[in-house]
Every structure is written in C-alpha cells, then in structure tokens.
Length: 276
Ligand SMILES: C[S@@+](CC[C@H](N)C(=O)[O-])C[C@H]1O[C@@H](n2cnc3c(N)ncnc32)[C@H](O)[C@@H]1O
Image 1 (tube, rainbow, N blue to C red):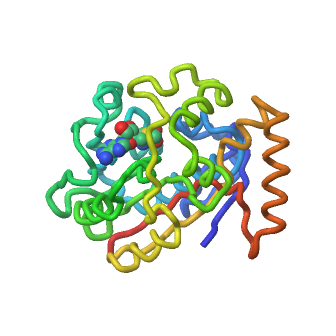
Image 2: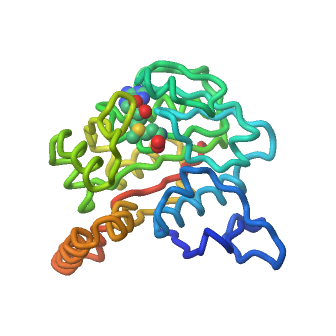
C-alpha cells in the first residue's frame, strides 16, 4: 500500500476534516508544525510525515491522550496539536537522550524490548527511528501492542532494509555511519554521547513485508503504509551535489536492472497500525 501526496508545506498547506492536504484559503494562517517536520528537506519524507499528521489528527479521539514514545530520545515527530493534549511517556535506554528530552511528561530509563505497561494504557504508541536498533523487535512490538487500548494506534517510522541507504547502513560498520553523519550531513556532534547515529541491528521484522505479517497475526490493522525517498537524498543534493548525482545515477541503474517496480531510493517508511 503506497499513499503519497505533493504539497508546498512551507506556505500553502493545511489539513482538511478528512485528514487530506489542501491549499490554504486566502487570509488563513498556516498550521504550526513541529521542528522535526520543518527540519526535513522538502520531498517525500516531509510529505509522508505531513500525511501521517493528518491521519493522527483524524483518527485519534479529540480528548486528552495517553501517548507512549518508545525510544523517544529527545525529538518528537508528533504533530503539535497531539503533543499539546497528550500525556507523553518516553522510555529510552540512553541516559543522555532522557536528560535532553523536553517534551515528555514522564521519562523512564529502560529497554523497550522488556519494559511493560499495564495492558490498555495508551491511545498512541510511537516508535520512530528505533526498531532498526533493536535485537528483538518482536518482543518490543508485542509490548507496544499489549499497552494499546482497543482501537489505539501504533506509528512506526523506520529505514527500509531493501533500499540503497538500508543496504549500505546494514552492511557497513558503525564508524562509517558516524563519519557519514559528520562529513556528509555536517553534524559535528555525531557519535558523541546522546547523539545519533546509534548502533543498528536490522532485525528481520524491520523489513516491511515481515512487519505486515506480524501486524496481521497480532490483531493490528494497517491504516497507512508508505515507503518514501530517504531524506538523505534531498539533503545531499543541497549539501554535496556531486555525491548526490553519483548516488542518483547508481539508484537509477539499480532500479533499471532490479526485477519488479522497485525504487531503491525509498529508504524509509511510515506505518500506522490500529489495534482491533
Ligand atoms: C535514532 S534515535 C531516535 C530518537 C527519536 N525517536 C527520533 O526519531 O529522533 C534512536 C533512539 O532509540 C533509543 N534506543 C535504542 N535502543 C533502545 C532500547 N532497546 N530501548 C529503549 N530505547 C532504545 C536510543 O537511545 C535513541 O534515543
């Protein structure tokens, strides 16, 4: 299932009553967006996150919300209208990340694979840029599922292991990830305590088709499912155009020779699951 939309977010986008993007009416103020969304380069990643925000706005109850951010770290990708009416509980294994967190009402130093809440505690569980770091994704997902209220939502954002960036991340050592963040992305803090990149495992359940099977066998219904171009591509086109051109050319060749309608640029995905 692939759902994408194209929006000029900076100036003209709003979400209508159906959660769909629409052009602003004359004189209408643009919606406020979290820094995490504004910092994404224009492109499919930002569009997909914007679509996710529209769906959460439409599907979550219009009341106070109990939200569990698994591996929340110090950045939330949730829309501001959700964050403002939510009691957010973050569980993260990294003390520095917990210390830097400024949006959660409750922070817990713990491992999302083993930490358990009372069944039916949350309206929303979000696990964003985390499952690729876990050795036992199944244990974590079972805990998330149990902690959700019936009808509650689970949002997962993760890298696609069957993409160019996914394969490179999976098969290169951690020092290379740190080098990439420092010298290609320009992040001087990369690799320091409490800062990305974090070591990756890429458990088989990170692969979309396996995650889909897990969801359907654990009483979870997929309501949004979108693979999108990794934001590293538009970032690189701005910061390192020669390297970006080389990678774009390599991706075009791979897309041509690989069977099926694959796009190896689609390095990340969003999934929203609903507990039946
Ligand atoms: C790439 S960061 C993502 C943070 C935040 N969700 C975001 O998108 O910016 C990965 C986070 O997962 C946390 N993490 C990794 N393994 C974990 C585990 N087993 N239990 C809890 N947190 C974990 C790391 O400490 C880190 O904060």
